Structure formats: structure tokens, C-alpha cells
Amino acid sequence: MVPKGELVRFMVAQNGTVGHLLCMEAPESSGPNWDRLFETAAGQSGYVTTSQAAEAGYSTHLLRKHIHAGRVTRPQRGIYRLVHFPSTEHEELVTAWLWSEQAGVISHQTALSLQGLSDVLPAQIHLTLPAAWRKRRLRVPPDVVLHHSDVALEDRAWFSAVPITNPRRTLNDCAREGLSPELLRQAAQQALRRGLVTKAELDDVEIALKPFGGLAA
Image (tube, rainbow, N blue to C red; front, side, top):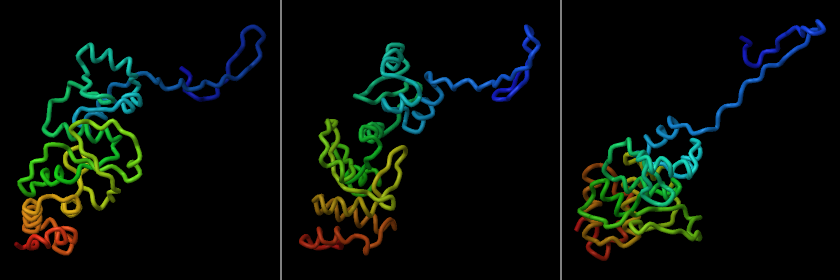
């Protein structure tokens, strides 16, 4: 058997001359790659976007076939879920993040709740998008509240499969957005007791709470 890509000699039987043949490697198949799709979904609680599926060789037409076969579901426009993965808590955070093309960061009251700070119970998912996205016209999912600001890497943490703002950024964001003084003070005091932040990092919190007796009230 001729090794791929190797220049070899061969005899042409009709006239006895010697020629050369360059055996080229066959191009890689661009067909659907279930393993690649599965690997992407594994890091996202079983979800993939349309573009991620396309990178694995799955067109929307092929995805529809898998939906009819019961292997894939489509919980919302542009997002698919592989049914092989068991349901997990907070999957709605993953779909919100994927909807943002993975540019968003879970933030504000939602991040506060995930970090176990205060008794806040947000009814919607708070998601911060890059400032440059402010002018985009988006079809926002009904369970998502948008904020626009650039979140530096040092202001981020991870909660399972999604990025969230860290406690310092979360508390100051909530202070600037007018979270109730009672919840803001409770959250800040809990974060200080747990060593998640220092008082010097909470300038916006102190400014917001000053008319209400301050942080220590």
C-alpha cells in the first residue's frame, strides 16, 4: 500500500517507461460529526447554538431530522438541546447566555442570588451585554432583562457553565441600578462577613446606602 503524500515510482507496462505518481491525502470529510456536537453540548448543559451545530456539520435541515427522531429538541429560536443529557438546575441561564452569542455575563440580582447574597428572588434573568451592543436591535427573550456595560475578565467568575459577575462587581452594579436599600445592605454585609469583598471595594454600595443610614445600619 502506498503511504499517503509520498512520491513513488511505478512502471508503465505498455512502453516500459518510468513515471512518478504523487499520492495525495484525501480531504477530511465535512459531514456531520456527532462526537464534536456532543463535546460542545457537554460543556453547555446539553445545549448548542445553530452556529455551533453548523461547525460540527449539522445544518438546520439535519437538525430538524434529529428533532423528529427524538434526539434533539429546540427550546427556543437558534438553540438546540441534545436529549442524551439529563436536565440540570439553572438551564435557563445557559440558554440566555447562548442567546447572547456567549458575549453576555449573568449579573445584577441574578448573580446576587446565585452567590447566596441577600434574600433577593429575581423573577427574570439579568444579563449584561457589551456596551457596543446597546444600539443593536435584538429580539430579547421574555425572561431576560438586559444591561449594557463592558465586564472585565477580573470582574467575572463562573457558575457551572455560565459566566457571572463576581461579588464585588455584582454588589456595585446592584447599587447603581437601585436595588432596595434593605436587600443591598443585607447582601453587602453577608459578602463582608464571608470575606468575598472588602469595604474598600464597595464605593458604589456606600454611596447608595448613605441616605439610608449607611452600610452598618
